[in-house]
Amino acid sequence: MYPSFLPPLVQQLTESEAIHLAQSMQRVAIATPLQADPILTNFVHQGGGKPDILLIHGFDSSVLEYRYLIPELAKDHTVWAVDLLSFGFTERPENLAFTPETLKTHLYHFWQQQINRPVVVVGASMGGAVALDFALSYPDVVKQIVLLDSAGLAPKPFSRFAMVPPLDRWATQFLGSMNVRRKICQSAYFDKARVTEDAVLCGAMHLQCDRWQEALINFTKGGGYGSFYPKLKQIQQRTLILWGEQDRILGTKAAHRFQRGLPNSSLHWIPNCGHLPHVEQTALVSEKILAFCRTATAAVG
Image (cartoon, rainbow, N blue to C red; front, side, top):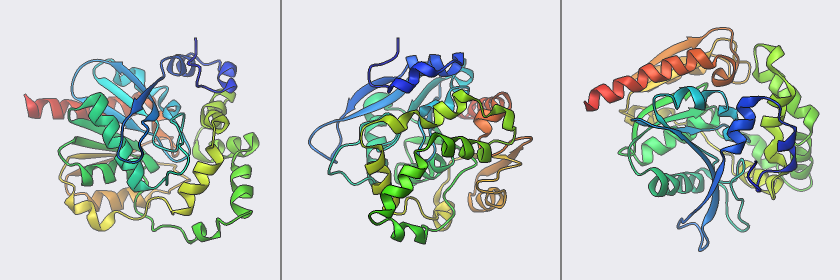
């Protein structure tokens, strides 16, 4: 059985990994200082063992992008994956600004109320920028960091100033097309054979959630995440950078910049892989993350 808050598209899933993850989703009411009412927050919790791993998805995505990685990491660790405020299947409250600051506040209170112990934070694409912001603001919460083809080095785009009515509606309606979502998948994947119907569904299912369009416009108008490069030297946690060799979304130069900017980082290239190494090369990515987590356990022990 699927949770009742998932949209009808969930019934079209056919891959076992996607079906199992969708069935394991939960919603919890997270109290925050952002508003009087708690925010219904979607998350997945699997496995056991320390350190805990917290997975953060990318822009306009959801926990479903971790459908292959979660079962692998959960064999040895307690794994959490959460839909950020204004994204995925988490509630999108009216009259609430969706900004990096509110996303970070919501994420912290989710961590505080559900996990409440230091975590290895894994962020993919925009999720990497969220992870960096989280580590800068709450260094005692973050034990180690894993960046998967991470954003967080580019300035805020000038295109955000063009997000005015009716252009904002047209832009998000365009992004909401299933054909467009399929083309986005084809750009993100190195192996085009992996662009299955389930891949498209997993990347588009949350578009049927209430206020998806309004929330995306709200977040985009603010410009999203800018460059963290000047602040990277403040991050002392060990950081593992995993990067697809054929990333056509962010390219490959950013990987070297992250390595230069983060004082305690190591860079590993993922071959035959585009912008989604955790999807295309799950076995290799999980192997490297698990080895990285063992160093955290050894440091404690």
